[in-house]
Amino acid sequence: MSPGDILRLGLLGVRGRRARAALSALGIAIGVATMVVVTAIPAAGRQSLADRLAALGTNLLRVQPVDAGDEPTILPTESIGMVARIGPVTEVSAVANTHAVVRRNDLIDPNDGSGLTVLAARPDLLPAAGATMQTGAFLTAVTARFPVAILGYEAAARLGISSVPPSARVSIGNHWFSVGGIMAPAPLAPELDQAVLVGWDSAKSLLAFDGHPTVLYVRSREDAIDAVRSVLPATVNPSLPGLVQVSRPSDALAAKREGDRTFGALFLGLAAVSLLVGAVGVANTMVISVLERRREIGLRRALGAHRSHIRAQFLTESVLLSALGGAAGAATGIVATAAYVTWQQWPLVIPAGPLAGGVAGALAAGVLAGLYPAIRAARLTPTEALATV
Image (cartoon, rainbow, N blue to C red):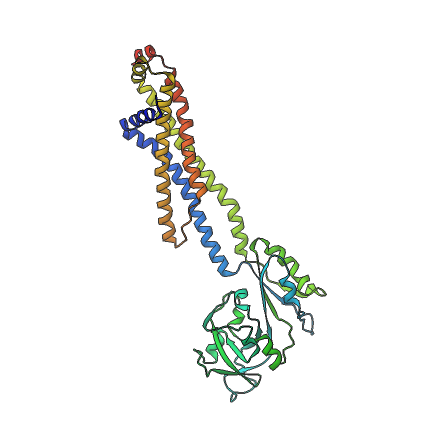
């Protein structure tokens, strides 16, 4: 018999008992659908969590000095460059308190700074601190040399500046600075909301800034953040590493790492159990089918069918049942996952590995489930099969 003949015989057996075939395939479908759902939904949840954690800055470290007694502790001027040389560090920037006073105009009391801080900033501050601009443009390598000021979100409200016309100016340390832009709220660095930022070079030339940074914003590869954190104090201030404070990584990062390790194994175990239950259902159906179809088996053997033909027929039926169940389960799992992640407003993530593994597992389950019934059917002699009807 050709493979096409065997396939047609297998399809004939499946179509002849459609209700039983559907119930048998249902077990496999549930197993595969479970495997897709329990891997795709956690994957989508992890991706959503990763996106949210990335927005919260889980790879952001904040470095600042710790005051010891009456003498303020300062960071070396070369600390930014030293941190940038750490291999896993991807971005580093800094701000520094100039201790200058900002006023809306020169008619306001020289000591009334509206509770705002004037910070010297570097042009690469925005990506390092996770901040963005609401209007205007941030400092560049060129504008940082000139009297240009960038207002934090809260600072702009206190100074009564809601837009950036060409004439917008503020007085800082008795020098006029043009307003170049207004920052959007910075949840990762809230101190920037109540600050007025000026260029590093212009702060040195106009505000008597000494060049020592106050706060460093350091971003590194997420997998190396603990190692980077451990070497930052000695890197930033080799002579006094104990007087350097480094912010701890987000606790959410540790929770995400633990979830990745535990939930994946648990969900895959549940899916494997579901698939095993489906395989048992197919095996049970095929055993009963052999018992009910002994007359058919005896007639075919009497007409010249070989044992190998009988084995191939029943094994093909078992594999077809499992394949149909696997395809239906995969489709059901994808649809269920898509509906759930849409409701949760998560990104749709369908891992290719578990999807392919579920279908392949269904086919393997069909082979194993049909192996014993196929061998049992092939062992029946024509006289035995016909006599037991």
